[in-house]
Image (cartoon, rainbow over all chains, first blue to last red; front, top):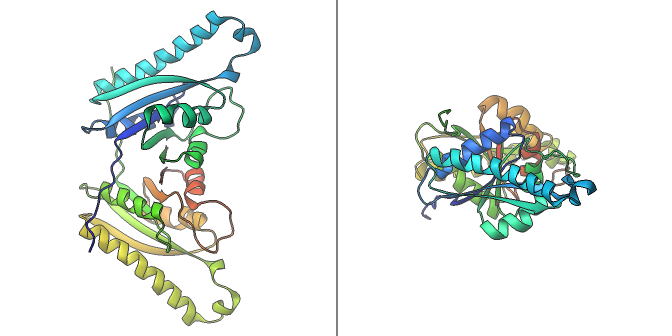
Length: 150
Length: 150
């Protein structure tokens, strides 16, 4: 008879969009509920898709900086809320690149090395090229566990 | 300032296959870890796909009964292990029908009314017609949260 080994996630990556959809809010609640336990680290990540930035904007660094600051403010807001709710180890960061799911897989995962991604089912990015929710593409492609929150 | 509301899942449906893949084992560990908390009910479900049963078999009810018993034994084994591990409220059941994901969505959900489906990323059924893992199809189509465990 083998002894039962509990499975607990210790490094949780929450992916958020700017839109603050109902499922993103629930994903936040779930991630923070897990992060209220000791020894759990929570990363909160959002992505600027390069193709959000049209050619006119890309010629104006000030505009791009503004966009970065705006998203950083959103992420910082989530980080503060998580800390107030009792999450002890919270890090917020933004990433930039092509499609959201690829940026998360290729930048956020190697940097934060989570064991669970928490993502709202409807988490979407306004201008992105690939059809379908980010959560499903992460569930399909990530090398780690993914919870699609509804 | 709004008060933080934790998000906890109370009725967890674990879907298993006969193959006992690595990800199904981890899905079991995660589901049971959650079910060790009081007030959590765990349902453990597996599915006989009708098209598993070829025409020759379908003319022989004894063969079909044997298949049902075999799968029930697998499910019962998981239920016992979950109970030994400290899960208080565990129910095992098997369902039958067309594609696994549709059977889960159309039979298991209305019967057990879970708030979370736990499924291994590689959970597969030998003979099923639809390409791709069951977990991803559930993550896409379920009206509730789904965790794809790796």
